[in-house]
Structures are given as structure tokens and as C-alpha cells.
Length: 206
Image (tube, rainbow, N blue to C red; front, side, top):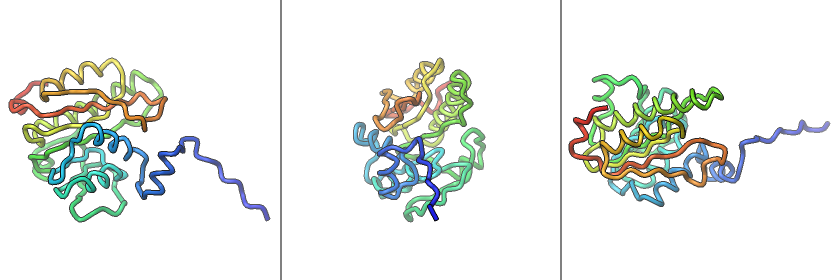
């Protein structure tokens, strides 16, 4: 009896295969690897906060770079085995209250956000929803990121990108855009690298 022919994953590429070989749950890990190699944001003793951390690839990679506490937040569970200095909190970054902030803590050295909305196929709607998530992540840095700390955020390219960059520049000394080679060519995503949070950023307006 012939075995059924398995359909190939149309999205599979060498990054997907490499992630599987290296036991990462998603190929997105290589985007963070490229960012780290270029900007050297995470250091050996840093405390890192990963927003939208499921399925866990960025958590795992960050944990390799630092001995400090690595915290992930997501509304989805992370089932991947994680090192002892990594914790995951169930939470919604777009719904922050005092209890949320107390649970998450503060004085992080680096905040990462690879959050993305469920796309609808409408580029204007998708970019608007991406901006909403990115802005929520940026505003959270006001409360949880120490002065001098760094922020990495994914956002879809669109009408709101310039607005987001301007908001980031109010809070950080240096702001750069970067598209890793591991991003799919058709993807509209780009990463904003915001370095050295300003001392007065805690009081910045939105």
C-alpha cells in the first residue's frame, strides 16, 4: 500500500528547516539573532522583557545571551521547555493596569516586541492594527524600561510608521529601522531599534 504523499509547507524555507534542526519553535529567532549581531543590545547580565513571546523562540535566544531574568508575556501559552531564569506571564499588553505592572516588574534593560496582528488581507487595516500593538509596546516601556535601556519593536510598514518613529524618538536617543534578511521578502514588517531611553521619557506625552 502506497503511503500518502505529504504536502509541502509553502512557507518552509532554509530558516524554517534550520529552526527545526536547532530546536527553536519558530524561524523568527533568526530575526532577533540578526538584530543582536548588528546592534549588540542584550548583554550578559541584562534583564529582558519579551512582549508577545509565544511560541518562545525569542525567549530561548535571549536566555542564551544573558544570565539575567528573562520574562515573556503573551495571551497564548508557551509550551516550549525554557531555562530556569526564564518566566512566562499570561497577559495582554494592550490591557495594562496596576496589577499587570506589579506582576511584570520594572527596570528592564531591554524590551522586545515581535507582536503582530492577525492579518485581514487589507494592507491599511493590517498596518493600523500593527501600529496599535507597537504603540502599546512603546508606551509600556515608559513604565518598565530603565533609563538608558533599549527597545526592539516589529511594525508593519504603512501610513503610521512615521508617527511611530517620531513617538520613539521622544523617548530614545537613537532610533533606527532595520529589516533582517530572514524576513520574508513579501512581508511588510520592519523592526524599529530604539536605543538609550531618555531620562525624561517617563513623563513623555503620547
